[in-house]
Length: 410
Image (tube, rainbow, N blue to C red):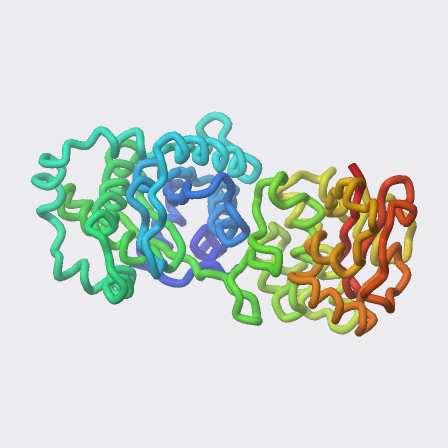
């Protein structure tokens, strides 16, 4: 059988489970379909943890299918209990609307929305208009409380408290699937594995109301070899918004991946052919650095463009390859000149720059020969830094071999 979207996603490590694998494979081999994935608008930026979903959508689009990027402007007013141990803070409609516009712009860098090749929708457009009594009579009747209580997302929250507001979330997401099925002939809902219960509820609702089949497909929640969630670092989340995580920082996130994660990340977060990834996955020792650089470059190019990827690579090579480079894209911390009148301890400066989480951690770093000032190793954590130490208004701090930060005066 000719390889199709299902096979592509499976061999690249995306798929965890589906409602009907054989039928899905047959459908995707015979026809081009419309599918959707919902995105949470509780922040103005998506982060790397949600990149798996965008990459799956991009692969589907490459193979001729039409993605619907559904921003949860309506469901965001309720809050999804899936994978959460406590209720999300409720947000205003105005704030959610602003976040929706922001994450739409980020999605546009990975998906092609020209000529309706992909759709950007906000479920607030139909959910806010719902009449509660009519909704309960026409849709609520098809949901069993006993059935809802069997889903992990509900069971886990019941132990710590689940509001009636959140309990409604699954009904609203199922309604979304039904609405998109009716209006856009949307045949498949995809999502992270934590969305399985919500997706199945939508499949069942369509079957009950329309006597037709729709399908669900979930993806692995990608973790690093160390067992950490994707996109989490010492400094916090790795965002897709360049203002929150610069292209250079984004590049560094990928190049600092654990050796054991490189092949998996190449499969999921790049569009490189399988054969090339297999060759890169066989590299050992010094060769793995080449694979990491390719991973970082390709991932950064997809999100921020080729120019930004080249710039980040050049800066990285300059810093870590003993080449002189102005490091224009290096993470930068600004400090007021007035703070330097009496001088500032180098250990405190490391903490201010974000290279360490505390002054005591910075002191240990320097004592253990891991701290550098303008590429010279430090040995005194009590070194007093004054304005005369700044060359052309800036200095460069380094923690270990790879973490840099430029400190500039203002």
